[in-house]
Every structure is written in structure tokens, then in C-alpha cells.
Image 1 (cartoon, rainbow over the protein chains, first blue to last red):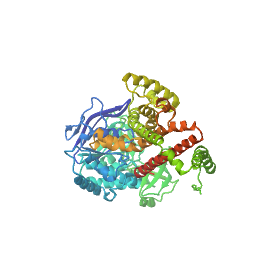
Image 2 (image 1 turned 135 degrees about the vertical axis):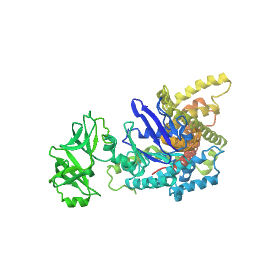
Image 3 (image 1 turned 135 degrees about the horizontal axis):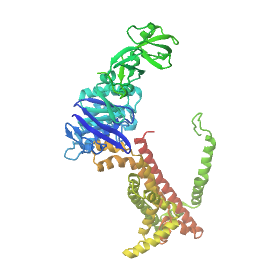
Length: 358
Length: 270
């Protein structure tokens, strides 16, 4: 089932949580709403679910082009998974999952044998069939979240909504569970939206990522695109660390240290140049036909899969470069050395914080 | 004998443990032990003949019955009061909230007099005798037990996560199902505690009961006081009743406590 929200605005008192947001999620897609806290991502998810109502004058919430803005959560056919699981702690795992079937009106309620069959099938799907008779407090965090997922799937929802589903888990379990969620989605192809503030999680799991900030969607695109072609300064900043430079504009051309970077529209006043640490090259000699910046190596962090080198320019501005261990040993870098730094991929943003690239 | 966590950062284990023991002994253990010793002075035959006498049996029956009923009524209405106080915002909510404590804070004799004057008139007006009857007794016991149920339930209701109700609604449960299947079970331990406390309070109530139910009805606390005023023989009757009451209350509270521990083990994290 496709999900579409149009021109949704939501405020809590004076705080504007969502500011005229529109979004279209295709059938069978797994979409991440990514943003810092307070960006409105959870509010958007709750409006899609029907747990929250959009302000007067907002557009519709469409499921398969059918407006559900006025129907209650129970009638929308959504499965909702909370960050803190929200399991019924006085019920066994089995009863938690069976809940949605047991509360159905008598006419549509499956008989006990059918409920049993379906619950056990779901527990197998989330790999918890051996834990059916345990209580939630006897399970680990990852297991609890899988019970919550099975419980949401038991009502055969058309849409699965997850609010920070891995937020309360340990780092290692998080990674395992998100990979597992991706595989599960590839199996059952349920239209899903999940909220996260962790960019790795969003980029790894989702088909498309909606990056949100201050109640707006900054960019809605594939993980590749938001990472490599950030539409705004915010997206650039939020998805990993950046080095910032200020470009000079003359005659509609942006230059960095005299080196031509790109053409910009006539009336552009300001150009902010961003370079990711892994796109900053360090060498002992000047790179021809390129912008070269003199800098001193301040620190080398080599504990990790990649090496991070902290540098400082003559004017005292800090910079960070990232490279492989092989590159580091080729360069023979030492702290205190003077080196040349050359960016190999520059993202340019104007004063309105939007990208100036095509 | 005493197990202590090794190298605790908190000082003063010995002195605080010692204080606890002395305090509890002086306040609870020694008076009770005295009572038991006193009853030890009589033979089994004497004891049983007192405890099984018709008047005393009737007193036990009425006192336990009325206390149980009063605690039950309080569990029901107290639940509603606590729910309303936590879940709804309305004018004078704080005032109503403070009112709940009145039966607690007022001297029981004052409550008794207040109830007496009110229900004497009311009874006359509607032509039903309330005061000096079992109804009066029930009324007084219900009155004094209310705060216990409300005050134990309030924090429990406050603690219910909004998400539990939301998830229940998302799974298609209506409000009624959400209440019975999700909310009520999580409040059950608190409700049982409140019920037990109201019950225990009602069992021993004297001050208000003596005004509104009078001294003619067989009521345990009043029987004890009446017999205390008599001679040596009557004193033994009072002691025998008191001891039996002590043991019965202890057993009941122990059972309720045990039930709670069991429920907590089952559903909660350590």
C-alpha cells in the first residue's frame, strides 16, 4: 500500500513540529525518516499512524490514494512498533502476539487453533518460537523488539511503522537487528516507514531516506544520493563529518585559493564549500592544477578500520582527513609535519543553504 | 548472621541495622509478645471457650464481613476516584485530591460524630435506620478506608505508559478491551495493596465505629474495649479476642503480601 501525506503542518503550542511537509512512499518501499531530535520525524510517523492529528488546514493522509486522515489508528491497518517495545508485561510472548487477534469482534476472530497456528508462525518468522511461554522481562532487548514486531505483524497490517525501533538497544544488537529487519522486509515486502536519528542505520537499511530538519524534509532520495549529492547544507552536515571552506566569488565563478571550482548563477553572494574527510587528499608535494593548502599534522588516530588525521592550517583552522592504513604507511606521516592538502570532491552551497550543483 | 554487601560505599550499616531492630522491637515486637504472653497465662480450654462463645464469634463474623465488604466497595469506587484524579484535568482538582485525605487526617472520633449527625438526619428523612446498625458500621469502615485505595492506585495509574494504550489501539482493541486487557492487569498489584490496607484499617477501627454503630452490635474492637473495662476475668476475654485478631490479621496480610511478591516476580524486572 502506498502512503502519501500532503502539506502536513503540526504545532504543539508555540513549537512548530511539522511545517508543510509532503511525502510519497511507494508500495513495498522501506523508507527512513532521518533527523536530529526535534526535527519532526516522530510526529510525522505518528500522524501517518493516526496517533496524532495534523493541524487544521493540512492536506490529507492517503493510503493507496484513499484519505484516512479521519479514521482511527485501529481502522487504518497499520502496525506500529515503539522504541521501548511497549510490550504487555503481564502477558506471555505468545499472548502478546495473539492480542491483536483476540480483540477482534467475534465474527472476524479466528478460533483458538487458528490463532495458535498464526502466532507460532509469526514467532518462527522473528526466530522466537522457543520463547512463546516466557514473559517480556525474561527476554533481552533485541528479543523484546522482535516480539513487538511480531505483535504488529499479527494483525496483517498494510503498512508497518517503526519509531526508533533500535534506539534502546546495545550497539552490536542494533546492527544485527537492523540487518535482520532489512532481510525480513525483502521477504515480506510490507510498505514500511521507520524513524531514526542514526544516519548509518538509515543509509544501510532504507530504500529511500527522508532527511528532516526543523519540521521540514530537506531531501528525500536514495541513500546513495543523500550521501553523495546532498541537496542542502544540513544534509551534508548531518550525514557524516565535513571540512568547511569559504569560496571567493568573482564574475560568477567560485574559486578556492585562486583555483577555479565551478560556475555559479550571477547574483550568488556566498559560496560555502564542504569536503568530506575521505575526499581530502594529503601529499608531500603540490598537486598540479588543483587547490593546495598548507597544513600541519596535529594528530593521527589509527585505532579503527580507517585512519583519521587531524590537521591545522596556518591560519589555525582545523581540518580532518580520512584514509586507509595502506595510504598512511605510504605517506609516512608524522605529527608536526607540514603537508599539502587537496580536496578531490567539493560540495558547494549558497547562502540559502541549498546546493549550487546540478 | 547478617549478610552485607562487601565494601559498600554507604557507611553505617551496623548502626542503621541496629536502630531498625531496636525500633521495631520496641514498637511492634514487644507489645505483641506481651499480648501473647498474657494469653499464655490461660489454658487452651479457657481460650477456646472465650473465642468460640456466640457473642465473640458473631463479632468476628460481622467485623471481618463488614471490613471485607467495605474494602471491596473502596476498591471499586477508589479505583474510579483515583482514575479521575489522575486522568482528567478539571477545576478544583487539587481540592478534590486533598479531600481524599480527610478520612486519614481527621481524628476518627470527629469522623464518627460527623457521620452520626449526617446519617441520623438522612436515615430519618428516608425512613431507613442507618446509625447503630450494620449499615452504619459499613459506612464508617468504607469512609476510613477510601484514602488507602486511592493513594496506592494514583502513582500506579500515573506510571501507565501512554504507549501501551496506543499500541493496544493500533492492534484494533477498542477502549473497553484496552482497559480490561491492558490497563487493569497492570494496576492489579496496586489495587490489591490498597484493598489490603483498607481492609486491615477497617478491622481495627474503633473511633468512628463506636459513634455510628454504637456499642450494642458485636464488633471486635468494641468488644475488646468493653471487656477491658471489666474485672480480671473480662480482661482475659479481651486478651483472648485481641490475640486471635492479631493472628488472623497477620495471616491475611501475609497471604496478600505473598500474592503480591508472586505477581511481581512473574511480570516485572528484578
